[in-house]
Image 1 (cartoon, rainbow, N blue to C red):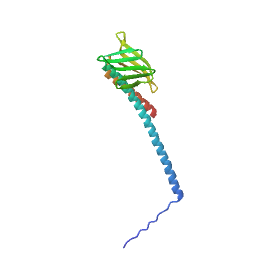
Image 2: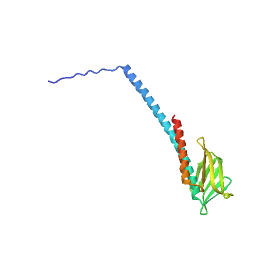
Image 3: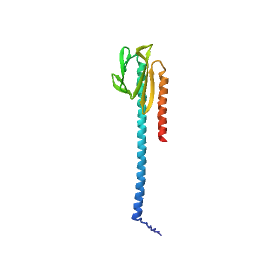
Image 4: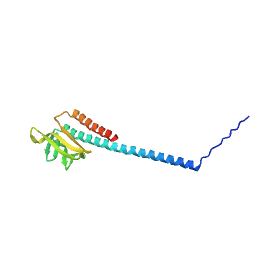
Length: 176
């Protein structure tokens, strides 16, 4: 004997369907606003990281110039780096920029440079032993020293860690 089952389907009214559509629409709007908020935060975080990487790259470039050259000469805002008697690079202080010119092209190292301190070799004002650069980046004041009379590997690590810690602190402050 076969049993037959009868199913009854309850129909929903037009008002119930409209309520479901409106509630799902509100949920989708809230979800997309949340996604947009996350997208804006990640874009801002990427810009901060790019600025930090650019700053560390500029530091490393100028530090490498000082370490790889034989001598550095200075005249009003222009620094010439020599290696083996040939000019390796030319670094100029133009307006508020520190610009490096090499055979491969021109690169802006630091922006908003406020001060450059020169430490001469044995009181000879033309030869440079060390160079200090004070500049602003993202509203903060930085001072980096470059030269051959120091331990560059350790100092670079310390500078990189201090800049990284500043970025982490700013990121933490932004999240609060």
